[in-house]
Image (cartoon, rainbow, N blue to C red; front, side):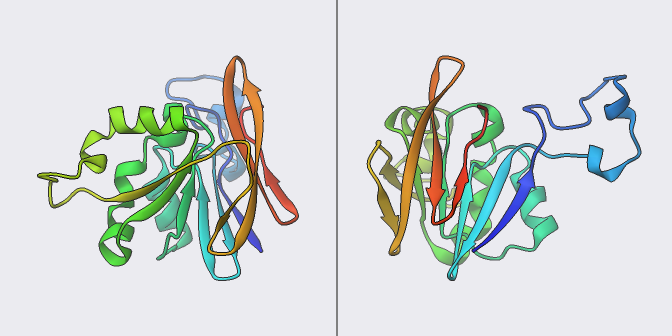
Length: 171
């Protein structure tokens, strides 16, 4: 298993626009951090956890050409705003499987309704296959995944355990 941390910044990324905080003014490349996301390469599968607004740049910077599934932790913008940018993967591979709590899927359907429509779909829109995550373990192409439920302030969020790796964000 190989885990690539695509972003480890705050919900605004680092540096924050207009901030005069020393970290935001730093020339150190370690102080230039995109919003949180992880790619797990697991026995031939590329599983993305969260797809935020920096998704396109994260994919380009890491030269990922395939995306087998997306797991969403929760519906905050910094975790979902890049969903439209899965289009290149969709055009090469077809519908991308997405996994999320039912509440998160409903929020995605509101925000990205054009992705989820089945009739008169815009030809440039990507497609997804929805999978509802509950507290029960599930599999993606034979790979066992354990959801880990916790609170982000008062919002229920899922982290995920895959083999010996666990990812929990905003905790």
